Image (cartoon, rainbow, N blue to C red; front, side):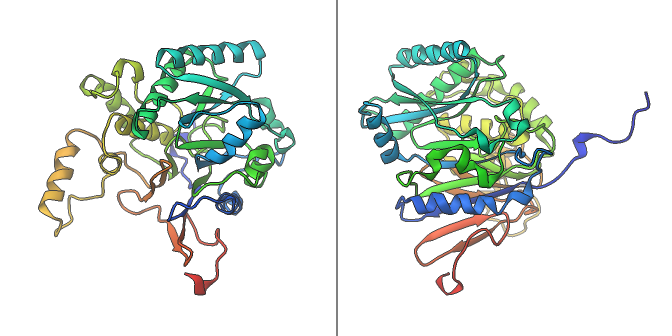
Length: 386
């Protein structure tokens, strides 16, 4: 068989991403609706299957809509504790297999001193899906997890991270299981649907009680991996636009450096390996999450992973140059043309690649709403309101 010169490794293109936030942390359904409308204007950034409905994948990462979930739980006859997290999972359609995973998570939660309050099958409308998406359609479930009252948010997030990693490692071989998010601060809604159909597939997103002050959104252009439900973005912290050309080396170095990874806040045997397979952005999200949950400052972690091109900047502050030089010996840069939007539920951030090859545009309006996106035209505003 003749081998052609073509290789999918050389495929390059650019997803669409965005972030919208009310800078005074005033949650509203309008922020969510605007994020959905902005996402719909990025449809051209991804491919569409021949069925006309299946896309490369899109999604939202939303600051936890706490009031909405309190209302939903009350409708189920459940009173949520003051401190709770929500795990959003793709589970097998087979009821027996799904129950096995739910039982395992409940047991792991008890072992960590957490309480699995109730499971909720997330309402979905399959009419939003095309044939390709339906062929791999997961069952979408949420679990409400009660958290200790005498601990801070960072400790809560770390416990939920450990819970998720325990379950992920138990079912790593199950292709129908994926943990979308497991957090007290954010929740992800994503799928292999077109952006305008995301709120059709997830009626939760159309509910007026579903409010947030911070949303990141993403339309995927699938290049180095096939479109999959689990690889839709945003991931647990970031959404990414472009390519990480160094990802193979980054993954190998992450594995090689595991013996050096240590944190007094995490049992490392429980959470390693840090970086799994999937897409380049999924691997970067894995690594960022490990550093943050291990106790590293969020902004420091970003600058370790995606530092600027500092070597030939003549007037850089000596202390800053020393910072980058020192950490370049401890962590290899995740390099390539890639813009990032990041969302922890408390912090909204945007970062460019080392050379600014994937720029982003932002607008701040007088009502203190900021919208950052991979292009202009996704956000309606009056120019006099900027």
